[in-house]
Length: 201
Ligand code: 5GP
Image 1: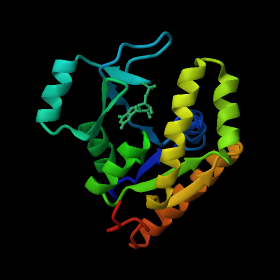
Image 2: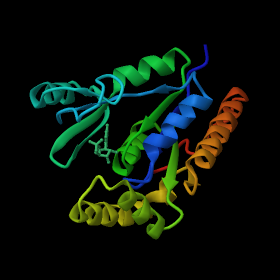
Image 3: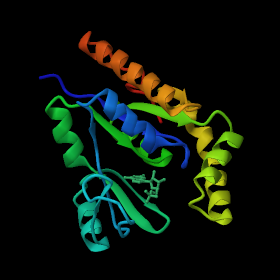
């Protein structure tokens, strides 16, 4: 059976990656979302194995020493990583895997798996991102400021990606990404390499 396609979706925090992922899974029920492992406590409503898998810092460090992650990162004092075993076994079974991850994580994955297809999800403008984050009203002014500063830096990374999708409307962005996945799968079935193969992040 042909190996599955690894699609890595990232972009500035607050741009709506999670919502776009949900829509994509609706378009493509065969798509497998990889679940990140984290040491932070679950937030209300978060479901283990759906939003994240939760673990202890000690167990996380043990996994790092076993090189069990595609990448790992410390974000706001918590460890995050994507279990390599989960992704590898899905790909080997021919399932396509969608990873939603931050920009640094995506660039690390590209170094380890050059065949991954990297899609950068960008807001139409910083003003639009600011409106989106402020509109959610779940964060204080300091957090919003910090997110926007981070977003400004993350936006500079888009040139390392295979595709840039502008997220002016989530359903339009999800449809564009669906078309990209379709095109990549055709390309692979013809034996051609995705654009990112061999590229340096
Ligand atoms: P949160 O805990 O708010 O869901 O995630 C915090 C940040 O960590 C977000 O920017 C999210 O993209 C990032 N994140 C979540 N899981 C992973 C992961 O497995 N790897 C990396 N590098 N970042 C992650």
